Image (cartoon, rainbow, N blue to C red; front, side, top):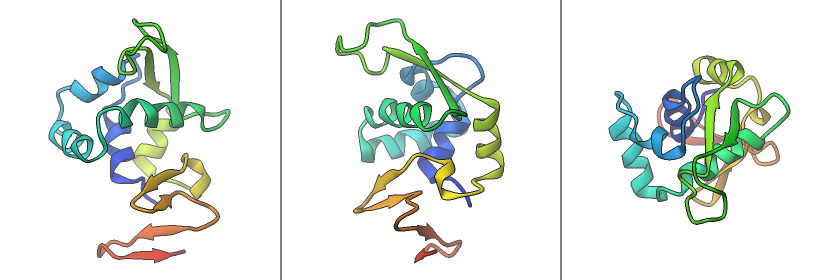
Length: 131
């Protein structure tokens, strides 16, 4: 199973070195335009929340979180934490998911990606289907 396009882009932009969400969003790479197209739909604050979801997901997290240059709760969500991709995160990015629960759930258009209780998938031809 592949990651959602948002997660695929996000994990491809994360590095093994610490980055703020602002740094992830602004990093120059071939996925810069794709990232911004998705952020135009979700809002820029969706990125730090999604990184938090990945960091909090399980004990062998795909993303690690550390304290950022600005204090949490001071109105700087794009700068209050730093994140880096773990070896497990790189494997999920490159090889996909072994099971739905490998990724934190992701609300999308009235459904939930990676939901074990209501598993929907996007087929190669663009149709949605239940597993």
